[in-house]
Image (cartoon, rainbow, N blue to C red):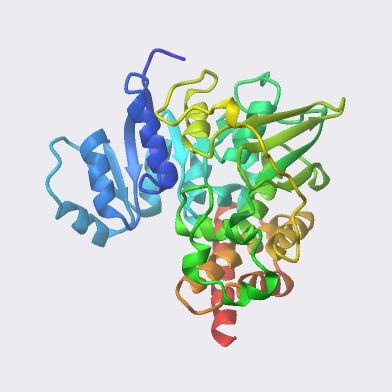
Length: 396
């Protein structure tokens, strides 16, 4: 690695990905500095991060959150507060920023990631929605402006590690001898639950993942396998794959994170603990490997691994995702955004757990839109999907 410290902008610093990223940086103080951080609702945690890492820029969502931040004990160093999407774009494109960690959940992180690509940054992508809603546009910007893109999601990071070394400094695409990829899924908390009891699934039950420690929305998405549906869409754009080259396997132990299958019959896999510090440290250090404080994997514990095909009756959202992938970019965006609103409604107690796939299916059936080629049009369509989905839920 270059001896010069890399300056990091962490968009979504208070979430689980942000926390794991900060832990890796904490373990490598001679390699990285935190230039900028952003947060949304957890202002107190963002303040604690600023106290420890002294970022030059702090991005908050609005004026109210700025006032709340400033009401906390004063920080003993000079810093600048920026607000909203404009603030996110400002730090993601700043000359001082070497690496942008895109870890904001939802479409809110789309424009700042796109602008980082246009400024040729090294991008560590954890935000699924960037590729799901604007995959073709985003990957075109990565290629056109020579940005470096490394996926942080454990499954895509595993695929990245199993591919041959890149012949350029930007990204690995068009692997001619790749047959297909197998993305693993834990199956979540309801893998063995009787289907006739899904009607009574509670928010508390859906918010507990058997293996991973994640935010509530992502944990619920894992239980419905929407999370895996988003990952197959991402994989299509990240690795330039056809839908038939993407397969999902249920693997409850979450030890094998993905397989890459080649045309000669070879099958490469990446294994490790279900600890996000592993893919984050790989992405931060790439092309080198760096240390972190996570537990090392003991090969003696490698036994009893299970793999099976997903049951679409149990996970109808995964089937909807494959159908959306076949239909194209617009359907993928409808799938993603209608799910966001459905999950918000489930958390708020407005709908039942089993209503989530029904709402997604209805929006895929009824919302229509021609192909969108500009980032602002995609953002406007996202807003339209949200309003239509909210209206549908209200009427039900």
